[in-house]
Every structure is written in structure tokens, then in C-alpha cells.
Image 1 (cartoon, helix red, strand yellow):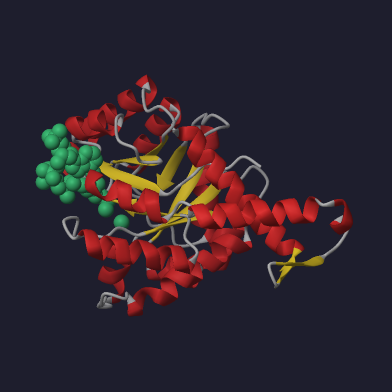
Image 2: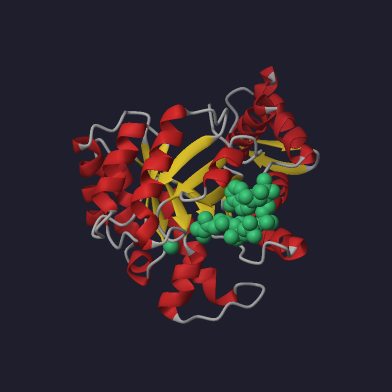
Length: 292
Ligand code: COA
Ligand code: MG
């Protein structure tokens, strides 16, 4: 099993040359070079060239590089998508899809733009319609030739569109968050939690990362380098969890347990499904260790 960790995904404005350069040295698992919300309309074209050049030049090491384009029905979207496909990032991140058809259209546009096979399609989940249409959006991951393999929650946009007010437990967002994780898992898609805006509030970020992990997210999107260490720590399996996972795998591998569906380990029932979970935990831990 080879898995790429997605603990921390740092956004940066594509118009900010300094941030793009700095990104190369930061310990985030993913960098999201943004042409959408973080870039003003009169800077869109310059930012597009700058991001395309940075992606094509590389130098991001083990980090996955994601190119966030403008929505395809904006004046910039198609040009962004073409530039992204040419530059060859690990993924193109599509803002504001509302339906499976929007994903299929982006997927087709990527094929027409000659996207490399390694370039995946990631989708923001950030509109009320996307929440209502989650099963249809997620199901497109199983279409032949689909590149869709990650959802990214856009909680700021969802707050704006629904007029929900979030308390510190994000009570009014729980439906969006759980529905997104459930739809993602139903179709083998990875899923990243939304950003924590108060980037000087380390405790608040920690609480929200713990909540995101408990909800089933693979990692958190971030807006500031100071947030990376916390997300990396919280979304990595803890040492005890990895040790237990190795113990479970070893127990099922014992000759006397071969072919069994359920065994007893340390006085607890352990099923084959736990061995599967354990293998995933170990694969993630190994992938993180390999990054150094
Ligand atoms: N990516 C890479 N580097 C970043 C960064 C980011 N998201 N945010 C800040 N930095 C860098 C700064 O360039 C600065 O580098 P330097 O010390 O080498 O000059 C350093 O980190 C410290 O930055 P700081 O002064 O604390 O922050 P700021 O006031 O310059 O910027 C924000 C604050 C919120 C404007 C900035 O963090 C940002 O643009 N975040 C991303 C916003 C975004 O992309 N939003 C869209 C998706 S929600
Ligand atoms: Mg958004």
C-alpha cells in the first residue's frame, strides 16, 4: 500500500512571489498555489504566469503541488486550467463545483488540455448545492478516466452562502463536514478539512485539528506557515496507535491465526477489518517517516 500523507495543505496566493519561494522549504505535505479567492481580479493573469512557471520549474521536494484555478465559468477559469495542465502539478483544484456534471466537465477539459496522467482533480466542497449533491459529485470518481481523488472543504464560503454562524465547536458546520467525509469514503476519495482563519490562535487551531481528525478528515487546509507543525502532528498516527497497528498485523500473521476472521488480542476482540485499518495506519506512518 502506498499512500501520500495529506496532513497539512498550505494555501498561498499565486500573486505572492515570496510565499511561492518560501513554500519550497516549508514542511507541509501539500502546497496549494491559489489563483482564486486569494488573488484580486487585476492580478489574475500575472499570478497565472507566475504559478505556472513555479510549478513547471519544480523544487518542491516531496510536497504535492496543487494548482487552484478559478471556476471554469469565470473569465479566467479555462485559461487557468490550460496553464495548470501544461505546467503539470500533482492536482488541479476546482473551486465551487455544484454537481457531478461540473466535475465531469472539468475532467473532460483537463483531458482536452493534455493533462498528464499523474495530474489528479481535486474539488472544493464549498457551496450549498455541492452539499446537497455530494453523492453525485463523489460518484464521478468511479467514472472511467476520472481524475477526482480529493475533496477540500471551503468552510468560509459555506458560512457566507448559508449565513450559518460557527461557534468554537463548529456546531452548524457538522452536517457539511460529516456529509463530505461520508461521501468521500463511499467512493474512495481523500478529504481535507477547511481552514482556521485565526492563524495566531494556536490553541484554537489545535482544537479544530483534533475535531477534524475525529470527524475522519485526512488533514487540514492551512493559511499560514505557523499552522503546519500542529496539523502534521495531529493528523499523523500517534506512536501508540502505530505500535498497536503493528501488533494487530503480527497477530493475524501468526500461523495459529491464519484464515481467522476474529481473534483476541490483549483481552479485546480484533476483527479482520481492524487488520485492514492497521495496515493503513502503518502505511501512513511509513510514508511520513520516509519523508523525514
Ligand atoms: N504561504 C507561504 N508563506 C507564507 C504564507 C503562506 N500562506 N503566509 C505567510 N507566509 C510567509 C510570509 O511571506 C512571511 O515570510 P518572510 O518572513 O520570509 O517574509 C512569513 O510567512 C510570515 O508571515 P506573516 O507576516 O506572519 O503573515 P502576513 O501578514 O504576511 O500574511 C496572510 C498573513 C493571512 C495574508 C497570509 O498568511 C496569506 O496570504 N495566507 C494565505 C491566504 C490564502 O491563500 N487564502 C486562500 C485560501 S483560504
Ligand atoms: Mg472558496
